[in-house]
Every structure is written in structure tokens, then in C-alpha cells.
Amino acid sequence: MRRALVVVGALVMAYAVAGAVGDAALNLVGVAVFLVAVLALHDALFLPIVLAAGALIRRLVPPPWQATVRWAAVAGVAVLIVGLPLAWGFGRDAGNPTVLPRPYGAGLGLVLAAIAVSAVAGRKGIERWRRRRPPPPPG
Amino acid sequence: MVRDLGAGLRRIAERIPEPGDFRSPLRSVRLTTVLGIALGVAFGVCFLTGVLSHFIQHPPFWFRWPSRPVGLYRFTQGLHVATGLATVPLLGAKLWSVYPRLFVRPPLHGLRHAAERLAIAALVAAALFQVVSGVLNVARWYAPMPFFFTAGHYWIAWLAVGALLVHLGVQLPVVRAALRRPAPAGADGIGRRQVLVAVGAAAGVVTLATIGQTVRPLAAVSVLAPRRPGTGPQGLPVNKTAAAAGVGPAALDPAYRLVLAGFGRSITLSRTDLDAMPQHTAALPIACVEGWSATGTWSGVRLRDLVALVGGDPAGCEAVIESLEAAGRYRMSVLPGPHLADDLTLLALRLGGEPLDLDHGFPARIIAPNRPGVLQTKWVGRITVRRTR
Image (cartoon, rainbow over all chains, first blue to last red; front, side, top):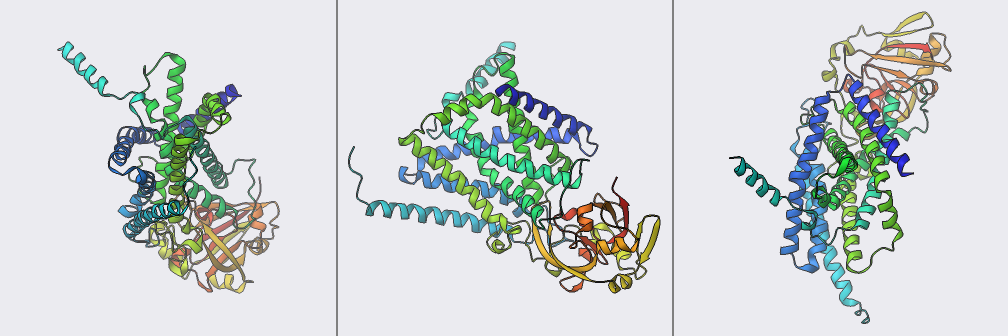
């Protein structure tokens, strides 16, 4: 089973390389540059920033709030990755207003605000629910 | 001098972290396994729907795509883009969970280890390539991509899936062991669940913020949807305008004639001739490869009626549709047999009861059920019917 997966996977990878090399529409150098660039930017820049942010949360945020802040940060970063290319608007087309028709900067702010509000409200709700419930029996 | 260089390199090496330096208690083999399985499913969905879309546009000889259900392609391609966008937090979390292993010491021991690390590098690079290029494509921001997006996204998908299979083969014992053991309870269990809930909720937020580009009732909520159904001339978004295609003068020329050819015959039809033929109406979506879709009410002439004009039977035939565009990747499309024979396939002359907007393909365009928008050729100048090879 394991050997079969590795062999089939290697064959599929070889098919991908051969297909890319044989595709006249494809700039191979461009593809290689982009592959290396996304890997390097992610591993050497993006993730270290995420780790630093995570360490800050651990150091600065009171422990009962850490999970809440962490989820808001994860959702916020995901939304920024999807939303920033839209908000920057390099893809807009003066001749075609149906492309990127919305105010994405405002939309991004709205979603981030909704994440923050729902995180705080959710945390407060959980605290209230826990206070009402009798504490679990010891042991 | 050499000694200085050596000492300098040693100092740099001492600053590179080791796996033990990453102390987050949230990481665990079980978390990585669960994230990996979810990510594998997401990549599987994207790969299958993506290859399907590629085959519909560039059919291999054995491939047949039906004309029904009408909205199947709208669903598969909407799913492709929605799943890809939801993958953003999932891929981020998976790579975070295994990041310490990047710094394993010694960096390489033996050929087998080197091959494994190379395969991992290919997998991570290909996965990031797919997600980042997909996000850039729906934002229509092509400048950061030094290659033709469609071809790059297609071939790197194969690379990603191949590397994923290799990875699964290498890690299978770890996955099995992690799933066989009962899930750790206590602090570990709480931490793992917190991460999974955070990632799932983040994926949910991204989906809700964008899915309205194809699920119309959510259009008001999806403030980050790259397109909005209902926005555009006659209530439909446009991918390529008449100005961008350079067809304005030819399309608006009163001397416009549609050339209909096949079976050794060729006839020409003016807009008036087409208007005089039996008119039919169909509510069909434009379903873009970029994941948005919007339904319009089209009316015009059935393709099968046009085939009959040159004395053909749509069964066993296909039609080559050519646009008035002088050039361009989507100037021409082939309408396969099932779509040619389908009663809903129209040479549309009107949208919502009005003559087609120039940007929607005036004087006439193809609209067929269950097809990518790029194949719904606009500004049709010539239709050639031929027997299927």
C-alpha cells in the first residue's frame, strides 16, 4: 500500500513535470520562480510573523482570553489573505465595472469588525454560561 | 579571514532554531493528522473539479460531458473556488503545525531522507502555488504571476496531487497510529479542539464572505465576493467586454450576417432572418471558471433548428462556433453533440426580453446548459456543423 502510493505519486509528479515542459503556453522559468518565491516567503517571512504574533498573544493576553484572541487572529489573517488582493484593486478594469464591483476595503473592515465583535460576544457568553452552571464535582 | 568566515557561519547556524525551540503546546501529531486529512479532502475536491473543468474545455478523445443537469458545472466550479478559498486557513494551520520539522538536525542524513525532504518541499511549494495563484486569479491580479495562470494552475495541480500521494505513502504509519490511539484528553485535547474550531470557523468566515458570487441569496452578505450576480448590463456580470475583444464595429454593422455552414452547404442569415425564426426562451446560468455564476433569461433560436436549416440531424454532429473577434484564446468553441441536440441550447438574441447588450454578445451569442462561461461564445459570426469524428 505504502509503496504503491509512493510509486503512483512519483509517476503523477513526473507527468506534471513532463506536461509543464511540453506546454508551449507555459513560461517554465516563471512557474519555477513563483514556486520558490511562495515557499521562501511563507517559510522565511510569513510563518515567523505568525509565530511572533502567537508568542505575543501568549505573553500579553490573559489566559482565559487566549483561545478567543487566537481564533479571531486566525480568522482575521485568513480573511486578509483573501481580501487584501481584492481591496488593493490591481485587478480592477476601467472598461469593465462588473469586475470587482464592490468597495472591498470597507468590506474587509466590516468582516474584521464582525470577527472581533463575535469573538468578544462569544467569550462573554461562554463566561456567563459557565457562571450559571454549578461547578463540576471535584475529582 | 577563512577562520572569520567559519566563525561567522557558526554564529548564524547557532541562531537557526531547532525543533525543540518551538514550544507551543497546541502542536501535536494528532492535530497534524486531522488537519492533514481535512486538507487532503479539500485538495481532492479542488483537483477533481479542476481537472473536470479542464477536460470540459480541452476534451480528451474518451471524455463526454452531458448537457444536463443544467447547473452541474455551475456547482462543480463554484465548489472548486469555494473549497480553494476555504483551504487558506487550513493550509496555513497545517504548515504551522509541522513548521518545527523544517529545522530537523541533521538537515539531511542519507539519500532516502533527502528524497523525502525534496518531496515535502515540492508538496508545500505546489500547495502554496495553487492557493496563492487561485486567490490572485479570482482577484484578477495577474502581475505577480510570471506565467499564464490557467496552464500553471493546471500542471502544478498534478504536481501537488502527486506529491500528496507520496507524502501519504511516507506518513501512512504515523496517520494510522495517530488515529488508532484514543484522542488525548485533558489540556492537549482542549488545545487541539481550540485550533480545529479556530481553523473551521476561519474557513466558514472566508466562505460566507465570498460564496455570494455564486449563491445569489448570500450576495448581500458576501462583501468580499469578486463578482456580484445582478451587477452588470442587463443584470449580468461580463468577463470580456466588446471593447476588450475589439468587436464593436463588426458587431454593430447593419451588414452583419451569420454564416451557417455544414454538409457542403453554406447560408447567410441577417438579424432579421434570425428574428423571423421560431423563438425559444431558456433560463440558464453563465457559470465562470472563476467561480461566479448568474442566471439570465435568454431567448433566441434553437441550435438544433439552425442545424436543420443546413439539412442536418444534430445526432452525431458537433458545431464549431466562431466569434467576430479577430484573435483571442476564446474566439472559437466546439459545441459537442449532447449540447447541440439539447432543446435549451440557443443562439441567443435577447436577454431579459431586450436585445442583447453589446458586452453580452450582440448580435448573437451561444448559451447552452451545463457549460463553462468561456465556451458560451459571444458575437457569433460563423457556425459550422460537422459530423463527430
